[in-house]
Image (cartoon, rainbow, N blue to C red; front, side, top):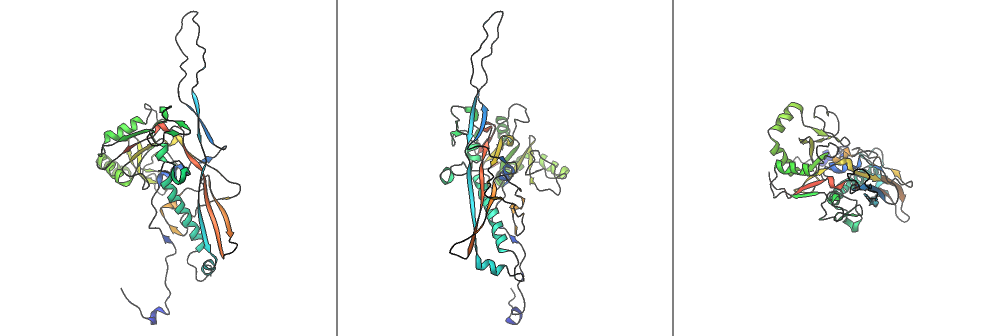
Length: 358
């Protein structure tokens, strides 16, 4: 490396790339797709009426037989409680003043710190969305770990027992270590009602290692499709796969397709696991506080990160304005996310576990 003398250094200014390059955070497709389709929260608990048994009061009859008239209970209410998450941003007043000198500033300290907090929070939420909701003293949002479960981890879901109502139990199957297309097919079959498209999984998700195993099993058909059409893609919002060529210029995620279902790699996904989700019955409901303002994500203004693609206008993401400290030259702001992730038909989801090879 060249070493310059004071003759050069004293009259030459350092140059900085005007954007922070993220080297830390991981991609997080599952969280993107759930938060992108949020709805407003209703009530002190979010109530979902579900039909858990059929009306068995029917029978054949002849002539003047007495017709059945007994009432039959077929429905129960699932309840989900609201949860909340926050992250704080503290700015040293002297540092902000120095940074704000116009002819010295490369990036705004306040804007960069706020953007750092936004994407750090999104990254942490991605981990929570694969967990079981019991973290931090049962204060975490629900995640795949309890919503997509057979009852071995989460015995109750939505305030109802999976033992009492086994239709609320998802599918959890051990792979025995080796992934096969038969195991993938059996997982899809177990989480599908007949050939109904509406009652079929909308997406398969795994980490990169399991995704690689799946692509290996699907060769050479996958390669022929890539060559003809480009990599299939899925978007943040659409439930249907879109061809790589048609998706050019849009933000999305690469996929492989099996049985018409897109299979994507999510770096936050639980290791050695292949998940199936019917996202039509997964719902994020967010609480919009009248005390706070909505967060508008900076979209990589100051930081080049995987979270440039985080959805705008997520229901429940808000910010409390900067407050000046009483006895320090400092300001503090907080970003909040309030609401919860809910499964309306948890029995339609499943996972294959313990995958170590193809």
